[in-house]
Image (cartoon, rainbow, N blue to C red; front, top):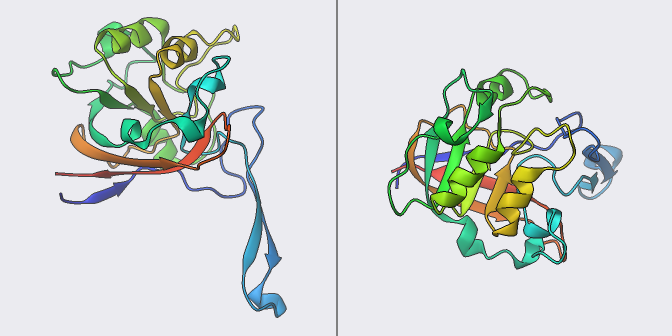
Length: 210
């Protein structure tokens, strides 16, 4: 394999978070500059901070928590798909073709360019709509990653895309930074925190380029 491309969002105070979610906090409890023997920080964060994995129990009663999601589902070959900049809502017709055997896709939209310019939340992010979710299921996609803090925008509060995908145990990865990633095939490496019974898992994610 060739280059390693880090596609994770850094965690820092003031970082973007989905509206209503807990904000990230970091405070030094031990500090070398104060004469302590070492540095240690107290962290506060939401279970969906930055780059993270949505497990089924995020929306599905009785669904798998994050510590029960197999790492084999999250790691392996993937394809980065370029969504045209003119697309606001990713439907079935907006998804580039995927060859047979591709089961993990990362959707690179104009969101990535906006993140690269400034890491601040923007409400008009490009997201997947219900027809796009159904098309991903039809193709047999088992993991979908997006360059937004949510895979969908839904003012109604019903969240049909989450329900459709998580009910079928499709792995959802949100908060990816894909500006430096060209469309094509990669090896995805992804490890969410092993939070017992967790409804989400902040993660470090990177790609290995061929």
